[in-house]
Image (tube, rainbow, N blue to C red; front, side, top):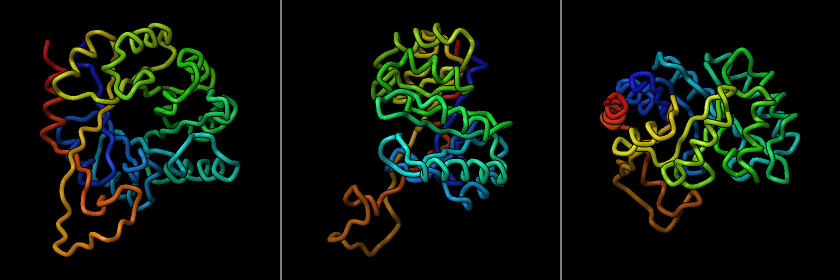
Length: 249
């Protein structure tokens, strides 16, 4: 089973996508603005990444940061961004949409799934923000989702391996349960062995300093002070270590 574990790596740049592929990633999830947990990447980033990698490319569809309860105009943006991702060569799309009570918005999820076909569709960690994970699992299955990304309702999936296992059992092959959150080379094998999952989602991001020599410490352009002088990157060697760990008996 270990040789069949698919590794999806979340990136926000062409360079990180290339590093992930070289390290052995099976699939790339492409986002913009990791500081906000990932939003829809620009058309230019999608096109450039598609040209740079040959593995499957799944594009995040999230019109803004914050919650996952969207206004009608935001929903229309999501529909248009799905169509754009299709035209730019994406193999799949990634989204999550909830109602005001913290349930999966089944009707609008189904609309987005239908709009995305024939691409594959992942429901992202908005799943972890739902009021009841096991009811949410039935809901995403009913909406036609192919895969759900989850950390079991906690910051990392390693904290709740039993929950992940129970979600896999409840899925009964209807949908792929893909754990994410805190998965690293040193713990990936134990999580897979315990839960029996066939795919994992990883960030493996490192923070590197900006190359800028001139800096203005008095001004911050974002919500996190000083973030202008840091960047997130994925290194090939980290991905390679994780993939190697999953191939070990």
